[in-house]
Length: 204
Image (cartoon, rainbow, N blue to C red; front, side):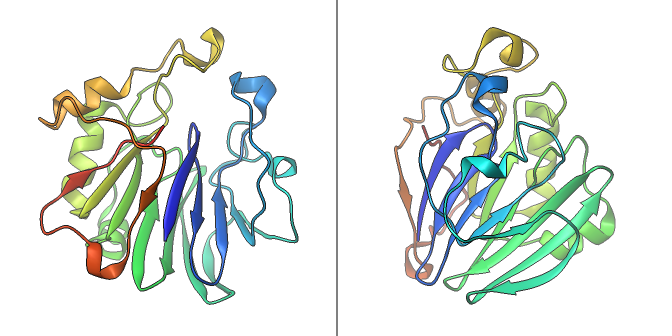
């Protein structure tokens, strides 16, 4: 399975049977150009233009933007409603991934039970309207994932209006005691390549 980031909370997760795009954004809002990409599944965590711009994606895809249980092309998906946000859990290629969307606070007991032990966690870390670096570290302790992929943080590519309330990924890495991690353009992982110890992967 390959994972790349398009920026903010948007990723492409490409498995053996399907490609998933998470939270496609409106380029005019963020200043980031959304690349041409196709998908079989598009998940939308909130009804905001930096998360719900499905017109940015090509292909004959299914949009999942609410709570419930779904199965599309061999991919199992669970959506959990948390206030105005949807948390998504994906089971694909014998791996479990969690995308927390625009989560703003720690998980409740039911969410913690459902999400605990995920192989891969995509978590907002930049503050503003989402988790701060400190609260993100607490949520990571609730889920105890093996691979942590930070998202929704300040970068030079975002326009100043969008980025003004966000902090950079470096603050999160410092909070986690993992400073100096070099970003990767793509992350490839399979069940037999899951690391033994918790690992942070920064994508660019």
